[in-house]
Image (cartoon, rainbow, N blue to C red):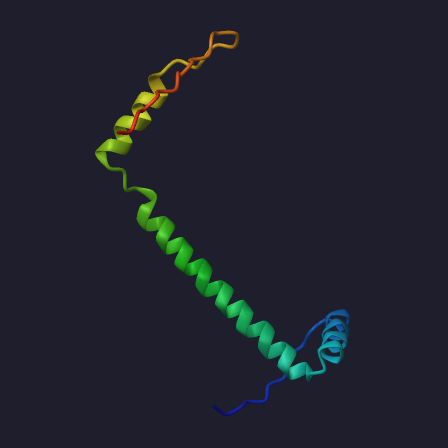
Length: 95
C-alpha cells in the first residue's frame, strides 16, 4: 500500500505532545498520526455497529418479556421489616 503526504493544522500544544510521544515510542510523528487515525476510525465503526444493534433491539419485545414487565409494574414493592422468605435445603440420597 502506498503512502500519501498531507498537511494538517493543529494546536501547538497538541503538536508538542505528539512530538514527545513519537520520541518516547521511537517512531515518527507520521506513524503516531496514522495510529491515532486508525484507532479513531475503528472506534467510530464500533460505535456505528453498537448503535445499529441497539436500534434493532430497541422496539423488540416478545410476549414473555411484556408479561414479565407488566407483572413487575403491578407487583407491590416489598415492605421493610417484613419477614424474609426462608428456603429450606432439601436432602437427596443417591443409591
